[in-house]
Image 1 (tube, rainbow, N blue to C red):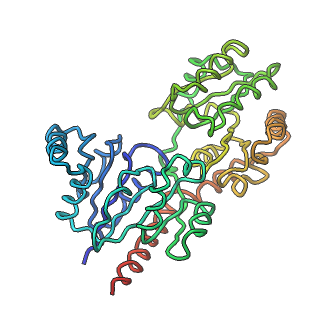
Image 2 (cartoon, rainbow, N blue to C red):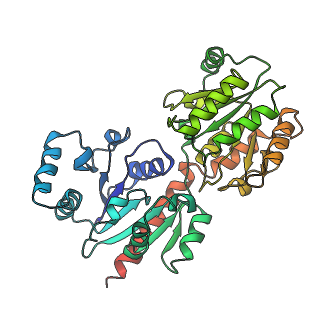
Image 3 (cartoon, rainbow, N blue to C red):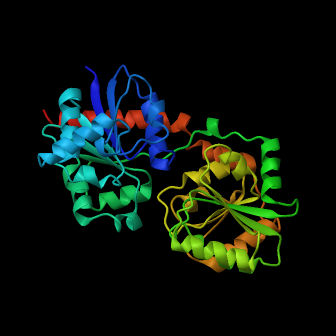
Length: 380
């Protein structure tokens, strides 16, 4: 008999946690599983789901006017629209297990848990993210769920401090088949951005946030103000006050040295391949998929020891330094500038391939089977 899973996630966009789920959904054996997907919002991968997967968008954010009309009607009767919608999906689909991908869907944890249905929560967040989550939400994550998956050892360690059983590790991963570059496009990007042959370009990827280390950019530029370096920041510009401050100070004091590309879908890897070095400035990371991508491209790395950086970056790949130790970070960058660190691009690519979809997906499917067996046997 097929096992039935309702996956609940944010949007199926191109973020780390969503991409990992996307790879699973594309490849999960449809001879063994019936799958339904519920998204809070409709992301760019939603319409690319295989045809055999049933899919839904939260009424509130659905592109269908009929869904939005249903929401207004049920609200008139004092019924929670999300509870109504998920109950309706459950009655029709009859899932054995609900799989909630990230705790960043707090609406779901505020609902009554469906009777007889097991709940798996995949946790990609760490302590800083926990501070943005209501206590009641996180409490329900651990009281309502029957099993928990962490995206890294450090996450599993934190989960295990609260729960003694049914805690599982599934490392996040990338699809190296999608990491393709074009030398002509790379040169075109350099020309368009005003990058000269003697410029050393450092790339950073992520949202323009304090937690991603955006504030470190200014002291880095100050330290290397007499050197031909540029910093290229890939990722969504969040139009917050910190971004305004850093952008304007950089333009005033270090003109043309800081480049914000904005969010990229096309040419992302060509932009990354422009770089001579990769910086991981985050104060906290659970994993860092972008570090794996940089390693696959053979870009020397300098990183704070956050997420898996300390264990991942070996001697011939770059340098990792203690969290927040800016002087050590600057020294590491200088050593890369001067060629003081021997870089083995083959070793870097080999290390990244451990976290490739082709290696990790069979492990992920095996884990899902194991959890399913454990949870459903507990009913007997």
